[in-house]
Length: 322
Image (cartoon, rainbow, N blue to C red; front, side, top):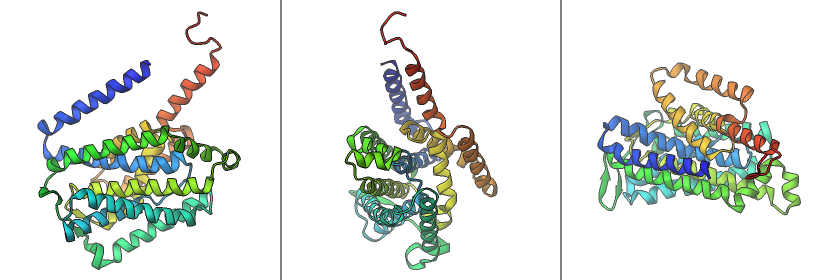
């Protein structure tokens, strides 16, 4: 109960802060907050496929790029309400994610990681060379998103919509994690054989998790188009995948709270290291290796495990005097 109260108090404090932020800070700060919210949705998507389903996939940035270009092209050519373009990006990413999952999930462990990594690299090659669609190495200029005639021309205009979309995706992630579907995913993560013995279709669960994760990445890409005016394919490379993976691993694999905390922390770190692009990958790689070696369950997951271990070791029932 105390834990629940603390969580509610923290959520209330964050909600108040986010409400007053547009009236107290500059446009650059709002840009950073918008970018952090995109990272949160990206990390939640990777949490679903790695943390919930236990599938080590490295194609997240490819689906993120698909969401960006799909939403950006739709905005530029047809100017629909931006919700439709974001949903289109998420839907296309989900379909491709399901197809790639159908092929890649015939593999396991390092082979799955290599297969999904290859797909991510292939998609970046497409982004860098399909000049008529993506602008290739020249990048693509984004048109302002619209909602019933309202044009989102700056970070302040996009801010409330980005916050609402992030809150919705966070709610969906928590609801999924607490549902029977989430329990089935975790059963598959722990043991395919045991899950199938309980009547769970392990392959179908993995493919669905892959599709949902890809949809989250596509929606994050669509959210990015709300406040950016330009996208270059170089920002959709393996470095971004490593960044999001670091967010999830350091925050705590299998922890929604950890994914959010990791996204915000490393989103800020990536902004601080913007002028040191040559060493970003080295820093992220070192952090990732350190946590995998010494804290493989991450910060928040370790705390949960420690609390569980402490309670299990205490023979005194709650509310009983020792």
